[in-house]
Amino acid sequence: MNPNTPYLCDPSKQEHPLDQAVTRLGRAVENEIVIVSQRASRDHAHIRREGRQTFLEDMGSTNGTYLNGERILGSVQLRDGDQVSIGEVLFIFHDPDTTTRETPFPELEINIEAGAARLNRRVIQLSPKEFSLLAFLHKNRGKVCSKDDIGRAVWPEYQAGIYDYQIENLVRRLRTKIEEDANTPILLVTIRGMGYKLLGKSDI
Image (cartoon, rainbow, N blue to C red; front, side):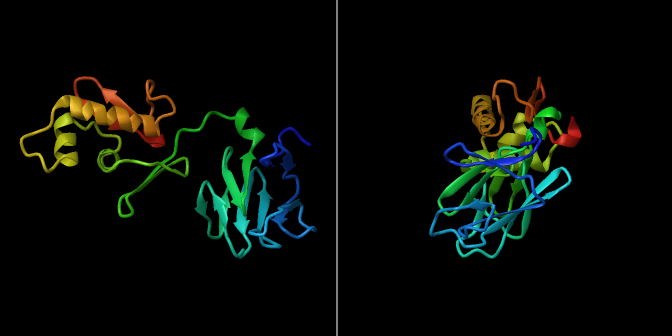
């Protein structure tokens, strides 16, 4: 196998190189990756290589194809470390080529209407106050938000005001959810004497 060829790693740690233009996954024996599961369709999913990019596509399977715990619709680009679930089988996608590139900036997505947040396409479990803080910072991304502004936005029910330690504790808890190292934050940074700022890739 070419050392730069992306591959899937199955639960037994066996590596399945994705060295063809299309790799078929399913229960049928003619697939390149045969999945022994009654929940897998005969022709369940395809993985396509397009240059340096790799795409996962569900082929109308009965029980669905899942990427990082969420059912996919249509074609979705795979990234190093993604989890692909078909039937009861969980694969990890590895792209050796990404290790030679610069470490990507964390990708944070906020859906205010759905009350959901994702980090690198994986759902983050947040408390209501943690989500309120993240949503407020995201709305003001790239701007410094003072503790007074955060207090009013996150605790509107307390007209008398919020103590600094409550805000600091909430920021600390949120960092444990969105930062790789909460002690060295790169997304939610402290601006001394002013407040906090949420950064995106375009802000660095």
